[in-house]
Amino acid sequence: MKIAIVINNNIRVDDAKLLATKLNLPIVDVHEPDFDFFLEYTQDYLQLRWPRHFNYHVDFVGGKQGYRRQHGGGYRQLIARAVGIKPGKSLTILDATAGFAADAFTLACLGGKMTLLEQSPIVATLLQDGIERLQQYDVNIAMQLLFIDAQSYLRQCVENKAERFDVIYLDPMYPPRDKSALVKKPMQLLQQLVDIKQDEHALLQLALALAKKRVVVKRPSWAEIIGDIKPDVCYRSKNTRYDTYHSPLSM
Ligand SMILES: C[S@@+](CC[C@H](N)C(=O)[O-])C[C@H]1O[C@@H](n2cnc3c(N)ncnc32)[C@H](O)[C@@H]1O
Image (tube, rainbow, N blue to C red; front, side):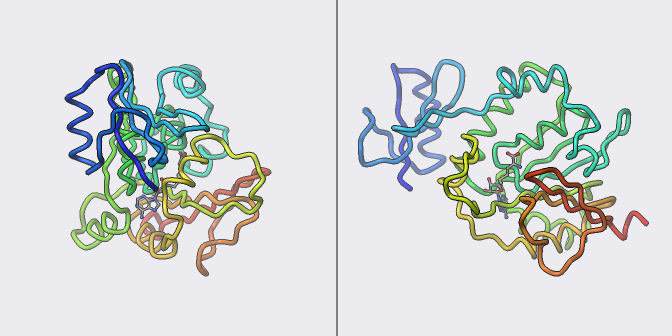
């Protein structure tokens, strides 16, 4: 996957140069055909151009997600029930596989104190840009992002008996079953940007050792459970399943 940085109309030139150094990417003047993706600052945000497809930026302020922030998705929605988030009850939640953080944002809007982990530098950079813009707009939404591999982070937490979270949420990538299925734009991008090989089993075991109350794993409805660890409760919709493991630490 070849990615470059484009400086458009002299917008945020210094930021673009810093980003190029940080991500070790070349800066190109024009949209050269050699590259698959281009990162580019506009006046308002950082976007990823995917030529012949679409441009994408993380937006928690406007659009669908902005609507969600203002009106909330409610505590009856499946993800909220799986995580156990309730009105007036604040939970610390680690989303160990953040992606573009639609799920984390849903939980943050319901009052979850969110820590997000993301391993892909491009995904983390776009997400951080979205979080910074959100925080200028609404200081009540708690989302903090760490660019780190979740396995090393969780392992360090377990070894150091460090910070524990009430809930650990996992939504690992899974290969699409039906290649022709309509996939939303953020997921199309993740499928391009992220290596799908992951050790979900190790992640789940570490999460179980660390979560104070529960671990929630999001899966497609047709997918098998991870490893041989049986969930305590499964919350199902037509396409998605949330496998919920109650922590022995909560008993
Ligand atoms: C399916 S996406 C998550 C989508 C997210 N729940 C949302 O609502 O947008 C999975 C993400 O987890 C990240 N990921 C997978 N394994 C990881 C690991 N070990 N550490 C950190 N991030 C990981 C991938 O890079 C990808 O961005």
